[in-house]
Length: 161
Image: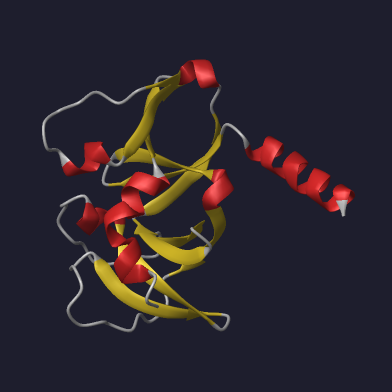
């Protein structure tokens, strides 16, 4: 049993400081790789009535029901048609699988802790309130999403699926 726990800790250590980066418009966002389960193409989504517009609905993910959230809409950006680059990042938060629709995937970035800075505070900007850190990697700014902040207001809604 100790060996299994040790292996999990080593896997977590290997992912520490690694972020899956993706685009919404021309902005690069990152999400801690520890939360990422997989990346999939956008399948048909079953609409759910009486939920915020950024919750696009649910999908069946190999027998598990996963709510799907549009990052673009949650950040109050205009919805655009999906194309061949649009995909869903499946993450785990509080033992739940949740899909995040993004414009496109960029890469996995290794970000040292000394490259991370706290996000600036700009009033009530919704996208800013979900940020955990900002990184400047090779002259490129990456806005890292804090999954706990991002899902905080939705956990009650999405946990019912």
